[in-house]
Length: 628
Image: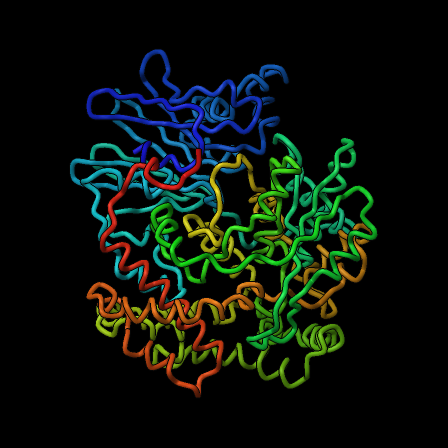
């Protein structure tokens, strides 16, 4: 299992085995205290064995609880904090930890197993339960290293994946393998498996402060704390991936200020996006460099680096390596490795890379996806509805007709008559699936129920936000990477807007603090007053997703078409995809360019994955291109 999982440089490997139980752990050193790492943690009486993959944000708080001095805390790796927490609080300890973690504990005398993952599931935990076997690992490759674990796909989960809807929280794309969702813990004893949620923030709790200024200050405090946590331990320098959007710009401003107080400088990296708006999205900006240049003119404590757009989509020859590493398909074509970007990170000695990832969940709250206007109308807040409609007309230039018909009445109508009967009318991705597979899995009905549940305006939109936080944000583990690159570098990523305590805080905010007078993301904008130029702080446009991919996409069209044509005759591919329908789509000149291109891209990627899966066998990492 360890050989199959080691896709990065490994500093230490340890194995414990006794009777029918065995634990393995391998470590990669990032921080000075990792020199004290020693896992598995086995107590002298052999009553408890613990392994964990952890990066903790609240070491100082825990050290105070444990009575450890600063010097004692510095002499303990994060795993020792987790061990001490478990020994003190037992199965309640996950709720006392903050950060990213997955932990597993074995009690040999009681033959009892316990596991948990962090609140948002940033650390994966996969497990397999058979009549005579219980195995777990932090990667899919680990569990599949055992011959007893079937490689059979979970057809329903695969159909949901293609249709782009959520499947059951514990399911994966593989029939034998389950995953532990964020905020959950697991216990296994005497053949009985129990999974329970330990984190469930109250959606009805509303934070009441005395003034707008207090809300802004509280938001700024939480945002700064979350950003500080991402910067508290790393080697080398800190960087941020800066798109020019409000979320990443806010992270840049706050992180730059934190580092400046310590005499350090943040390295902000921006890729200039090239190409044209081929798919015609309105309100989207392809090249956001002007916003970054405005920020660079006012940020004196930050170094800015401008790179050309990504070199293009990854070559098809690299796809099988991606599947081999991650064992899941990708929904859009992966970008290729960018030598200029890698060289810049190396030359700057970057040890941690921050981003604005996760802002779209709760932190950077938007009014349109929330259905705020429909909520105001259905709850009788007509004066507030009129104010917000007038505000959105003024701020975003939206018409009365669009705001009344679509943003208000349309959402209410969908709550009464959720979605049409035909699956293809609900989601164009459903048509990619083989009709027999659609019938076996009931994916049309699952899609209808999924879309109805998300598009029916709730009487309390706060419950929708709670669902986003506890169901969507906690199920992002295990997606295939979008960039093909080297695994050699020891760099850590950080996303302040995925801090669970920050998101809990945002969930408790009154809507009128987040959305007012047509402005959404109000507290984020107000907290950045004086830190971001108004051209960035008050921007209402958004970036165009993957413009570089779109501009380079044409170079692969013929290869993608040839790939799908060759694979469409494969029985495994034909059993999962409607190859005849896909071929007709590509030949239908009446369809828009984007429809044909996206259909082909997704079909080729899925077909290649299905064909790879049919011949796949887990190989030790040494046979892969996994670094030195």
